[in-house]
Length: 124
Length: 350
Image 1: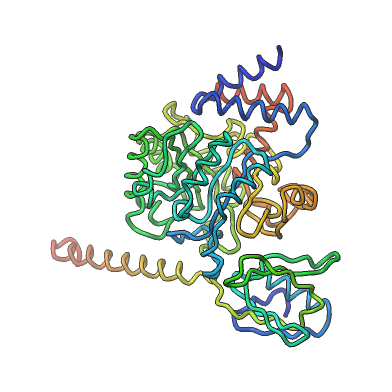
Image 2 (image 1 turned 60 degrees about the vertical axis):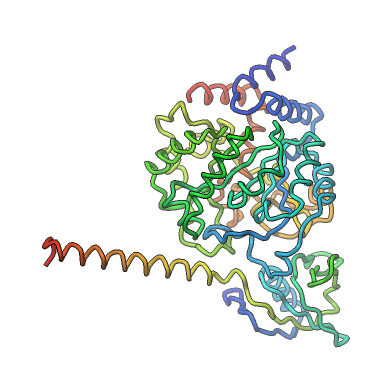
């Protein structure tokens, strides 16, 4: 994954080296949806990755899991893959819907005014 | 003697907030200065939840999965954070604090601790929840209003919000609560409309106005309307020219000078430390570069030199938000007689 590529929900990354692992975990920290970590022992953990320490020892990520009150700290050497499993709530879709609604209303208002002006003989 | 005179004169400058609040803040800051404390917090930004009943275009605070939005800080966690941090002012933000079922207990406890609280709310629930609170010099409702009806409803992406907020403000003022408004301005703001909005806001009987340019949150839905630094200065120059006597600001005079480009400041990211369901946020209220378990860890482990306008950090390049610069302005006022004189001059020129 290059820096220029935006992470999309649903993507899975199996680490091939340490620098890629750091890069993907940093992207997971930046991601506003849940992620699923695959651990080397075969276990999976799904939750929100809200903190990380990737540049100095001890190297770890921290997650909040649904239904668990306390955060879990996971050493990064135990992680072998990350899936961006949850939808991204920061994808701007609700705002796009609001903008589209306002745009539709403005177009309808313009049409209404145009029609009234025509009826009043002020527009051809 | 000189110190007493200094404090007394400063109090005279800021009569829009209770004298006890001015005294508390002034003596706190001067106490830190006398002890030689280089970095100290001024306002605790407390986010007891991220859940909000609005989804504003310029907000990057609330985009989380449901299980995160459903989390709450307990009153005990909030009080412990206030104790640990020690800042004389606590701004309760979020999310929408009035959605929190124990917000009244949180506020009561902070009042017992004699903290001056700014409860930031969009006021959609204010009228309904007002009975939970008692008027106090320690409690101010800081209501989010970004402009007149058209601009505000556009900013919060829902119609009718302005009217509901105004009703809530009127009711709170009528019942004797301290009320301010907080406004965030974005690119495209019309200075004349903003001035008309200030007139309208003051007519509601509020104590004062807080105004700030919006921070360009990477996670905010609308990425097109954040102000660049030069545009911010130009906009505030136009808004604040021939400032009306009726406008009262809950901001320091030097911060207003900074917004107009009359003073250059760097950010004080530790001035408004932020505590939320993840812990102590590094480095500031607006950026999320990680979390610390304690306030002490936040202060000692954050590489502060990597943040602020002068650091060259691109995330800080266009930020002129009060959460970063108000503390700088206050520090300037108390840092030297020259800074204090600047404050007097800026105040007298209002």
